[in-house]
Length: 231
Image 1 (cartoon, rainbow, N blue to C red):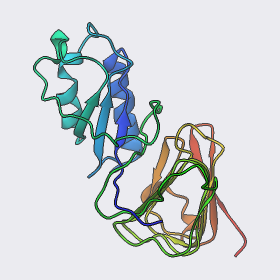
Image 2 (cartoon, one colour; image 1 turned 120 degrees about the horizontal axis):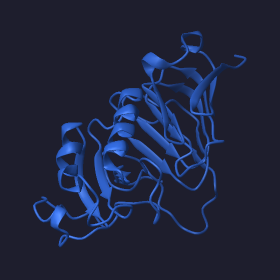
Image 3 (cartoon, rainbow, N blue to C red; image 1 turned 30 degrees about the horizontal axis):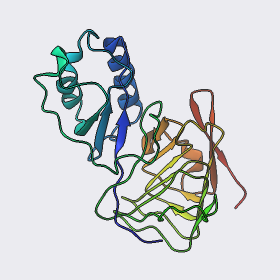
Image 4 (cartoon, helix red, strand yellow; image 1 turned 180 degrees about the vertical axis):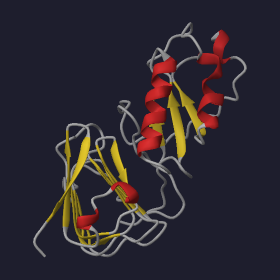
């Protein structure tokens, strides 16, 4: 189950870019620090050579603190992209061949934990130990069950729901790939960030009545809802 990998996020700009950047600003405001320290792949599959404001896109993203490590789609020969510093995407930059709506986890980081994929693996990943600070568990195939705690500075990403039998002090990102019915369950909620299907809440935005207690988090519309569970 151990490996050395990292999480990259995929952003897929859409025309009109001014509206897309406005929506990105709203996401950043809603999830302060979400992009901090994370490498990003820019996927140009949803824009065209003549898309207005395309030439300034890399600068627009960097001004928002987004670190671009790769660009996919599009063409270096487009007039708008000829002046770009065009980094090559790592060959393992994605866990999914299709672009996600907002940001999709993919492979690559230096202090992380992720299972090796093979056809015989179950849809639910069970992690028998706590997730230490600096580690990441990535399982886009289904649910993740963590028998211990998730430390501050650690992150768990799952295609389905996340079940944590200890304290959640780091980050939990459930429902990646558009699975909005996913949930996050923890014995003690002290999280840095919780996300479901691209909607996020930081520690400051979480329901204080659930602090340090057994909690489930679900998505209702475009809002994360925190519900206390019996201890």
